[in-house]
Length: 394
Image (cartoon, rainbow, N blue to C red; front, side, top):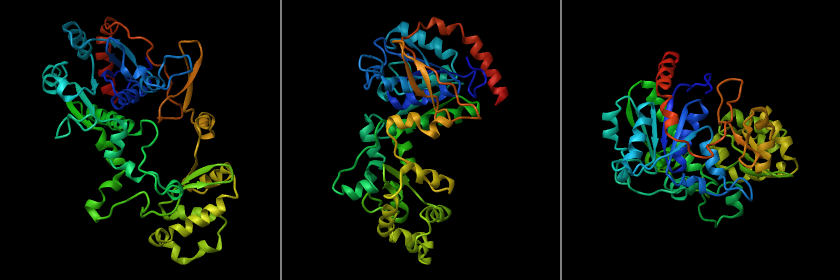
């Protein structure tokens, strides 16, 4: 175990089948926690989710991504034996992460009140699509309806995409954006609870986590406005086509506007004193976009992105997958590292979306096969000692 990482000495038991809660465990593992994934006897359903790591591989890229750094054990929580082994693991744990439906928690031994009574110092994190309380607690949520239920899909596509295809319906962001936002909220909530030093039940709703990201959805309750992908109040920037690709531009602050004007060589139209007012710039968004796009069409992506970053202008290239792995920024920050595959090959995987000092966090592989629970029992006393050490460091 890496003892220099922030969560070294913390043991986490994860009982999950979905992306959001699994990603919360992944983030804790990246920070050094020992995360033990409890899988059904047939294996986690995420192991069977495409795409796979190669044409002839049965290893799920999604499972690899959300399970890196974890160990796993196969338990049937519907059996007495499985419940006993689960209780033995929980006895030595500091955090439990689960995404069990509220109607199934009691049957599987995950009832919050019972868990709190048996293990009063345990941080019990539940990550569900709509939380475990309220009228929607039993609703099933997938990535598609979660991104839209939080309002983010209502604003997409925007920018150049909306200009070119104004009749397109709302879109979801590629991948598992909404669920991973729920995982981020889950990990941070568990750490906040852990920091208090008191056991408690932590209830996270993936919808709420995404609503916090796209707050435009709820602003109408304050000022009566309703943002829409075709009529957003912030009218310039977005997707810009360059000579050899596309960039994303967003200038929310005054100094960023000034940097953009300098980036474009102080064109005559941008010297209009009225454009110093952000409201006026939004009102003239269509005109400004036209000028930006005419300028950008003459320049290659790498040239203007490098210049923009020197001037503090928020701009980045739209990357393909191969460009992400070879990108200058990603390479400089060592965001990806190679891990071994079962077939003898290697795969580049993100170590973590953050770092704590000059050194990147280590990238670790995912569990290939579940282990027996007895292997974890021996570490119980060691985990308790390490937790005492972690409390002293914290």
